[in-house]
Each structure stands twice: as C-alpha cells, then as structure tokens.
Image (cartoon, rainbow, N blue to C red; front, side, top):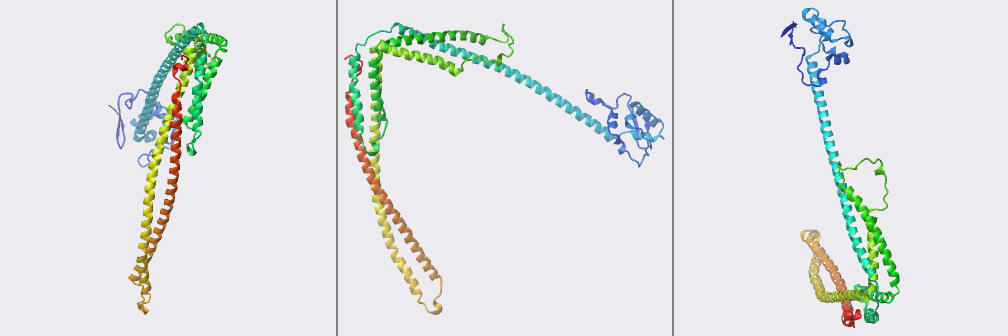
Length: 487
C-alpha cells in the first residue's frame, strides 16, 4: 500500500494495482469513464461544503478535464497540501456508491434482457419446429385419409360395375305371373279404402288425422304404385338397357379417374424430407386448379353409384318379375300392411287407455261432486251457526247503550264487544265467499261430468270402428305366395 497523502480529516491510500475497484462484470458497462458522468452534469460540484474547505475561485470546465490532468491535480494535492482548491474536483463517497449501484443495476438489467431474449428465441424456434412437424404430420395424415377414401370409393365403384355388367348381361324375361299378381292387388286395395270409409264415421274430437289414417292413405298409394309399375315394366325394358349402359360408362370413367388420383396421392403420401424429387415450386400455393370440393367429390361418385343402383334395381325388376318386381311389390304391400296394423293396434290401445282414463276421471269427478255438495252443506250450516253469536254480541252492545250519564263509558267490554261483532261479520263474509266458490266449483264439476260422459261415448264408437269393423276386414289380406302370383 502506497501512502498518497493526508488531510486534516482522514488519510487516503491507493492500492498499487491500476484499478480503483474490483471488476464485477465482463461487460463494457463495468468500465465506464467516471468523467463522462461529470461532464454530462456540470452541477455535480454543488455537493462540496464551504464550511471546512474553501473552494477555488476558478474551476476549469468539466468538458476540458482529462484523466491525466485529474491525476496531476491529485498528485499536487498529495504533495502540496496547501493547494486545497484541487479538492473541489473530487466526488463524494455517495456518488461513488451510487455510480457502482447504477453500474450493477444496468448490468443486471442488460443481462436479464439478454437472457429473456435468448430464452424467448429458443422457445420460438422450438415452437416453430414443432408447428412445422405437426403441420407436415397432419398433412400426411390428411393425404392418407384421402387415399383411404379413394380406395373405399374404388371398391364401391368396382363392386357396382361388376353388378351392372352382370345385370346388363342378364337383362331378359317375360312376365308370366304378372296378370295374376296384378289381380291379387285389388283385394288389399278395396280393404284399405273400406277402412278409410269406416273411419269417416268417427265423431267429434276422435275424427283426427292420426297415424292410422296416414298409413291407410300411404297403403292405398303403395298399392296404386305397385299396380302402375307392373303395367309399365314392359315398355321400359328397351330404354332401361340403354340407361344401364350409360350408367356403366359413367362408373368406368369415374373408376379410371380414381385410379390416377390414387397413384398420385399415394406417391405424395410417401414423400419425406429426405425423399428424392422434392423441390421448390414458387407460387404453386396460390394456384387453385380444383374443380370440386370434398362434399361434391364424394357426392359425384355417390350419385353415380346411386344412379347405377337405381337403374340396376329397375332393370332387375324388368329382368325378373317374380323374384324382383313381384317380391318388391309384395314386400312393400306387406310392410305397409304391417305398419297399418301396428298403427291400428297402437291407436286401439290409446283409445282404450283414454276410455279407461275417462272412466277413472269420471268416477273421481262424481266423488268430487259429492264431496263438494257436502262442503256446501257444511258451509251453510257454519253460516247458520254464526247467527246466534252475532245476535248476542249486537244485543249486548245495544243494551249497554242504555247506561245512564257517566256510566256510558267506553270501557274494555265495549271495545271487546265491537271487536267481536266485526270478527263475526268478517267470518260470515268469508264463509259466504267460500260458499259462492264452492257452488261455482260444483257447476264446473257438473259440466266436466257431462263432457266426460260424452267423450266416453265418442271413444266407445271409435273403438268399435277400429277394432270390430276395420281389423276384422284386414284379416282377409292375401298371403305372400298369392301376391307374387304363385296361386
């Protein structure tokens, strides 16, 4: 340690090293020139005291002071204590600590900012890498799903083409049993119409357009449709053959397109980042040469298949009247016949339940009428019972009005008698109101009784028509062999 000098207050020493303070950071901000802060703040010498040292009258400008001049002044101060004016260029310990603190804080802030930027950048790179990888995986997954869709529709097209080829090759035939089956449809047709006529005899609220009536109307339409198809199938045979060939052509063209699309998408599905043949195609993402959407794409093939199936089904009817046309029509008539029977059964069950419920409600209504009548009698008796207490209270009040002179006092008995009269009158008023409500309720119950009895008669008539008339006729519906013309 080298002795530099002394003052009247303290002794100053400087280490032999070239640095005044130990380095706390490797950043450039840790080695800032303290004269820069002094140069930027000329008023920094305002802290100096005038009570102990006398400042010099001429202080050089801070902007012209250099570090070597400062060291020279300090040296003169050390070796020439009488030159006290040089002490005015020094800083206080608080300035020294504040400078260090500012350096520490700025260093910590810059380090934190750099660390935050570094972490955010790493996280951003990781997120974008994961996003790119997920996007590529999702794209590969979508292409794979697209290939699966193409494979599915190819199988559907192939299956339908095979069926259509078989159907076109087998399109022939005559109509051996058509007349007999057509004659058998007249019976069910008449039964359905008779059921509709009988159900027109329902009364009042039961004359509804229920499921039975809807199914009966549908049954008539189904039978008419079956009869019409039977009459027209011969005229449609030639046109059906041409339609079948046109449908086959559409299926084969769609099949060829599906093969090409599957080959391209399958190659795209197997492309990887290390695959050969990948390259940049600038602006390709802005091109949209597509002619369809996924819905329209699948709908196009589905429509072709449905059209082919429709044509094939029609051709199948024409080719095989017994196995297809007659079986189809007989199945339709039998299915609708069963639907009508189920609707009849459900409706009969609903009507029976409604009838039973009406009978139950009628019984409860009759019981309630009886109880309401008893309540009315009780209310009348209660009103009669209140007459005597009211008379007694009013008589007492009237008698007490005859007391002479000052004896006519408004005492507690008088107040109690007045309160009693008012209470009894209020009770009578409430009982009369309740009696009126009970009588109105009785009238309502009587009307409800009449309505229930009338509704019971309606339900009985509907049950008779559905159960006895209609269902008895529907037992004669022809069997399946007769509908297909075997007998």
